[in-house]
Length: 382
Image (cartoon, rainbow, N blue to C red; front, side, top):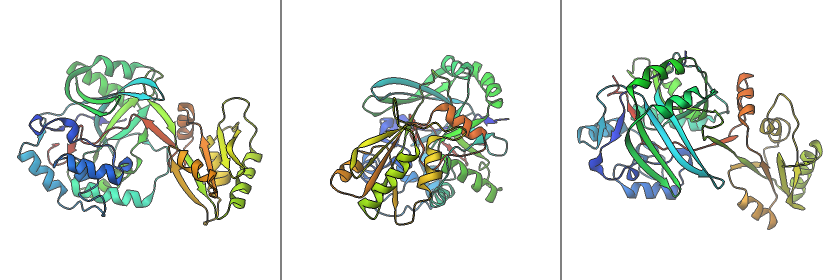
């Protein structure tokens, strides 16, 4: 059973001003400059307990739970009286096209949930999230789950949209909102959720950290659950998967050229849209290649056969935009910019069902769920 349950939500109160002053992007896509701007925008912005008070220093999360409890006492935050499900909706633009997404917010029972990873995680990142969770003793950020769906789950959410709790314009052309799920739809939602297996789309480090924290602290009431938004991957769901590219820096241009030639020589030429394009010294415009592998993903194949076997003197950067890397390449840097197509939903589920995971930074789901929109604190979710 999936076991995604209702919870007592925590929201910023209207008395604190516009909700956009307090919400923030996920911790892992906030630059130091953005961090500083969020801190300056509000004394109560949620970034204070997701990334800390100082963009230029390691965060100190001690006392975060006490701070949040004080915000509840002072009326900055309010706790709903009864547990319920909520809906997280986003209207956004991706590659020039407009999309709408809606997902169901609930708390995942870590003891009973059927939730699978799809990417490898990084130990040092999880250590940082463990310190954050121990300090906050609650979930102020959202794990993003997705499931296969014939359309019934998506239809239920669309038809069950109730009162709007808050609306946040997160950037130009993109607005996020939280709604109640109407009571009549809640029982149907619980039944549908209990029949689903979910894949983590975003928040692998947070979810794994929540499971570890609960196992290490079984006496902490509320730690058995993790706050998440569950979304459908039906074709009409609005969710988009974008790629992460790789920029590899070698000790010399000769080494970079040789490695790119090796990869290009092992893959067939692309007759249509390229699966992978290699920008390298002497081939700055890119060499387009196709991928016809069976039983593995494109990015998994590249890592297994070419990237993970690189010597330690080659450095890798994961990036959504290769413009900077290609620019440096044109100026003489010993770089190979590896542009990959996006992981498809079929690849995603096939990989997970085979008991495998992708390399780190293989997918970038749109939309990103913002922190501080809807929250759960252990002390009050009883």
